[in-house]
Amino acid sequence: MKIISIINHKGGVGKTTTAVNLSVGLARLGKKVLVIDLDAQTNLTYNLGFDIDGKTIYNAIRGEINSLPIYSTTIENLSIVPAHLNLGMVEMEIYQKKGNEYILKRLIDEQRPNYDYIVIDCPPSISLLTFNALIASTDVIIPIEADGFALHGIVKLGSVIEQIKSNLNTQLKILGLLITKFDKRKTLSREVENILQLSPQYSILKPAIRVNVSLSEASLNRQDVFSYAPKSTGAEDYLELTQTIIDHE
Image (cartoon, rainbow, N blue to C red; front, side):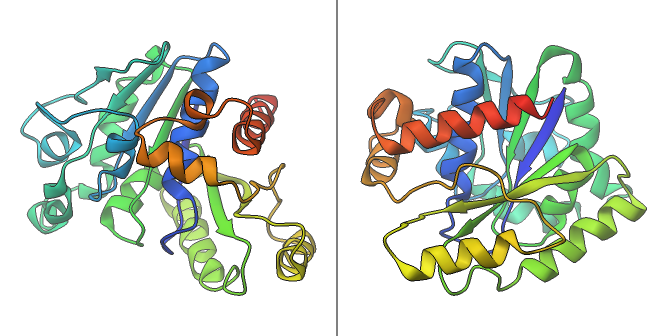
C-alpha cells in the first residue's frame, strides 16, 4: 500500500485540489482510500462536503484519543480524517513531547492493513506537522504552478525531503512534480514545463493539470471535479493522473 503526502510550502499551487481529486479518483477506480486533512485551513475537509462534528486529527495529534478519527464520506471506498482550525496550535502543544515527529506515523501504521492508499494533504509550510507526514509516508507528490515562481523554494523542499529520507524514513521517495494550472497557449507555461523536464533530480508526473474553471467551481460547491463536472478537462486530467499513480504500484 502507499501513503502519499501532497506537499508544497507555497500556497495556491493546487495542493488541496490534488489531494481531493486524487483521493476521489483512486476510490472511483475501486481502491480503498483514507484521506487525512493535516492543514489547519481545513479546505480539504470542507471541499469533500464534510461538516466537523466530532473528533478530528487535532485530537489525535494531541493524544486525546488513541487512534485516527475516521469518518465515511458520501463517496464509496473513501474515508476521511478531518482537520480543525485548532490544528494550527498543535505544534506548540506537542513541541516538548518526546518522539513528537513520529506521532502521525504511529497513528497511520495502525490503519495500513485497512487501505490501499492513504493520502495526506500537508500544511503549506515546512513544519513539525509536515515532518510527521513525511516520516509516515512512502511517497511524495509536489504540485507546482506553471508560472515564473515554479522553481522557487523547490530546492529547499527537496533538501528537507532528502534529509528525512536519509535520517528518518529510508523508504520515502518523490513520485514526481505535478504541474498545475497549465496553459499550453502561454509561452511561460511551456517554458516552465521544459525547464522541469530537464531537471535531473525530479521526474514530472503526467499529465500536467490544465487550467480549468471547473476545478475552482467544484471546490466552491464542496464537490470533487468528477462529481461536479465529469466531462471537464479537470476531471480528464485528474483521472489520468490517478491511473498514473496506480501504474506506479
